[in-house]
Length: 401
Image 1 (cartoon, one colour):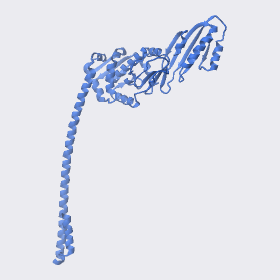
Image 2 (tube, helix red, strand yellow; image 1 turned 30 degrees about the vertical axis):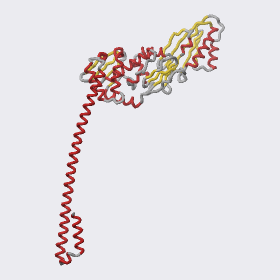
Image 3 (cartoon, rainbow, N blue to C red; image 1 turned 135 degrees about the vertical axis):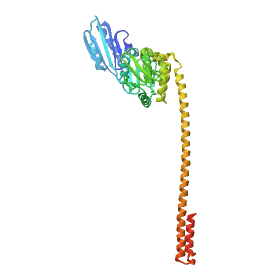
Image 4 (cartoon, rainbow, N blue to C red; image 1 turned 30 degrees about the horizontal axis):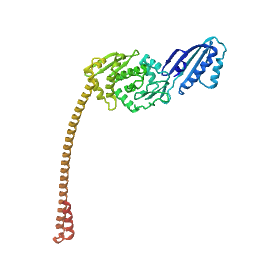
């Protein structure tokens, strides 16, 4: 951590956001000692700044300033030359480190998790979500220059940069699952203020990070997204107040602060995940809203009814049973129609075949009669019973059978 190497100096400013880390420090010392103090700081910081990031270090000494953007030997020599002095009087040396953070291969740096957590906790949640959305492409890994409990959501991972730290980079949320969840949400809900393509799973940490500000932000974001996905319509104000409307057997509408729905995180997430996760459907979403409208008059009332999820699940089983019975009834009717149609078709075919046989019989009888009559008329009896006529009659008789 950049701050760990400056224990003898006074921190006058330290802040961290998604895009930047800033650290200002001062120390009073004899001018002749400044070079030694700066050398130890440069040695430490040269290994603490991640290669994906860029920095600017400004050094102020005896009323003059010098800025550097790398730790090369030439640059260090120029700093030592800048600080060259034999004066033993105490003077103030100040340093300002500004690190510009960049996402590289889905990884973003954190230099002080506690300071970063303070930013997440104090900044309006809409601003934080917007900044996160611009840096996250389905997943994001935070690499921490310091100590943090390795933890993760299905799409966001926190890991330490320390060599001995466990590698937690497995992302379990696929782009297809996110797309299907968002498609279902868009078909059943309306929202115009939530930035990015977040879903409740994005902020469901598997365990705490050990940093209060980070844990608080993820809990607030998870409860917020769950409430938004359950509602028919929802809008979050810049002040962090959620306007929502749930249309079930009756309408449930209101305005609630995030601090009031934070204690409902587990219940809201469980309900939203059941409705939207793998196997989710519009029927499930509608069922959730119907059952909720029977139990609550405002969203905060969910805390008063621990049985809501069980009621949702029971009603869904009844719904499935009704659907199965309807399916079997329709299937039976379709089978009856098919059997009746087959019978009628068979009867029609038999009738057609009989008609065809009768027609052929009449035609062949006519031909046979014509042959015999013409034979008697044109020739004598002996000619009629000649071998030629006998073969003709035999052939016609065969065709008539």
